Amino acid sequence: MAGELKPISASNFYFEIDGMTDMQFSKIGGVKFEAKVKGQDKPLMSTKGGKSIRQINSAGFEGLFTLDVSTLMSGDDDSTSKKMYAWFKKCLPGAEKGEGKWGESKKTGSITAYDTDGKEVMRWNLKEAWPSSYKIGDLDVNGNDYIEETYTLTCENLNRET
Image (cartoon, rainbow, N blue to C red; front, top):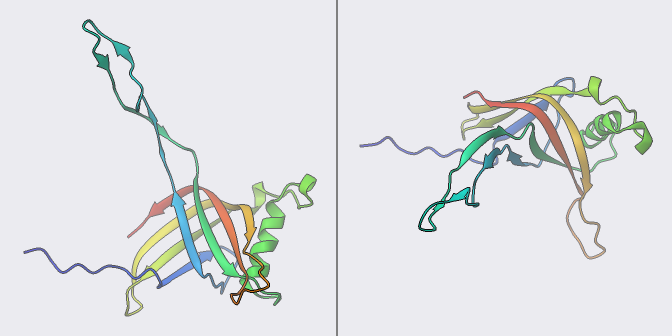
């Protein structure tokens, strides 16, 4: 008989980036890395009798991973909101009123998942990451939610360690 399934709660996680400590995130999502596929749904050739030949081959992978990290907007000087926006501005090109320091602002980091007892059960390590987009949540006169900021991070390497 197989062992008991022990699913990991989506709410027990921590996300950290080098040089940016004690940060708080409300959500991490959209982790994506895709294979490039050739052939897929297109016939390659036709043979005698009108039979189509199809073949699917991997053509490698897209070059970069992306993931979305969200935090609550805050004006506090030491808030995650301020730290993330400062990092975003460093990476933003000078032509867009950023600092244009994208190459020297890449960071490493990790996403850690914990079980209900607070024990680390899974870790993904990121390398060469930078914020490539910024989105502010809806402002609504009838709303009662906090404002959330979402950053899309692009990274050149993401590995699941455990």
